[in-house]
Image 1 (spheres, rainbow, N blue to C red):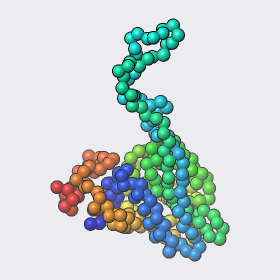
Image 2 (tube, rainbow, N blue to C red):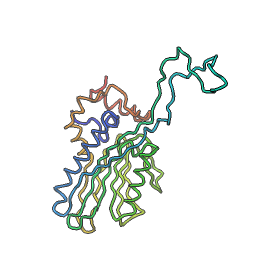
Image 3 (spheres, rainbow, N blue to C red):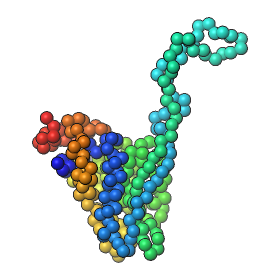
Image 4 (cartoon, rainbow, N blue to C red):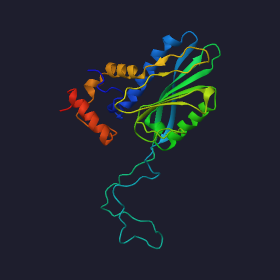
Length: 262
C-alpha cells in the first residue's frame, strides 16, 4: 500500500524510522537531480561527523537510589565524607557519554570551477534540539548565508523549535527554506501542514541556468514504497512525537477510511 497520507507521513518522524528515512531521502533527491544537472553540475553526497554529549546527561549523573549516611562514622576526626550503609545496593547513575552524529547532506558543485553552488540540507532532530548539535548546525548555516552558495533547507520534523527566520508569523508543521545567495536576506519559505501535499520547489543554480523543480512529495512516496514501510508501521498506534488534537482527529479519520485503523 502506498503512503496513506497526502503529504508528510507523521509516523516516519519516529526515531525508529527517521534516520533511515533521512538517508534514503538524501539519496533519492540526489538520484533525481543528477540527470537534470549533468554535465555542468555534480551532485555530491557529503557527510558531517561530530560528537555531542547526551543532551539530557549531567556531569555526574542522577542516582536512582540516594546514598544513605552511616549513623556511626568510623572516624569523625579524620573524615567528613559520607559513608554508604553496608546494605546499600549499587547505585544506578548516568554518565556524560558522547553521541556520534552522522548527518548526510548534498552539495551541487559546478564541475568547471569546483565551487559549491547549492547546499541541500534535510534536517535531523540533532539540528533542532536545543544544545550543542543545534548550535553547531546554526554555525554551519550562518557560514552558508555568508557565502555565495544557495541553501535549500528541508524540515519534515515537528519536534523542537524550527530554525530561525525573520518576518514570519504564520505557523506551519513543516517547512522548506529556499535561500538564494543573490537575494539575501530575503528568502522563500514554504509552509505546509499535515493535511497538505508537500509543495514542489525550484533548485537554485547559477544565474541563467534552468532550475529543475524538486518533487519532494513524489520522492518521499518512493522512499516509503521501496523501504516497505507499509509493512513495518503500526497505524493502530499513536504517532511519536504526538500530533496536535486537531491533527490527531484528522489522521484518525483518514486511517480509518483507508482501513488502517480499527
